[in-house]
Length: 44
Image (cartoon, rainbow, N blue to C red; front, side):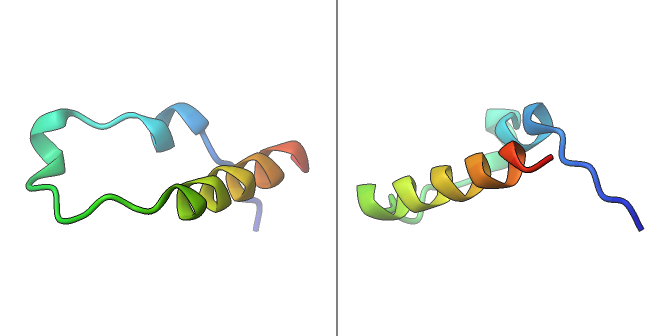
């Protein structure tokens, strides 16, 4: 099975669908997520 990621689909969502903000991730966690997505996309 081949799986493709569309970064524009991952990064965009209508504000109305987001709902209530429960918390904000610490910057270190945000950086880990960004690095992980970058790693995934760079190996494509």
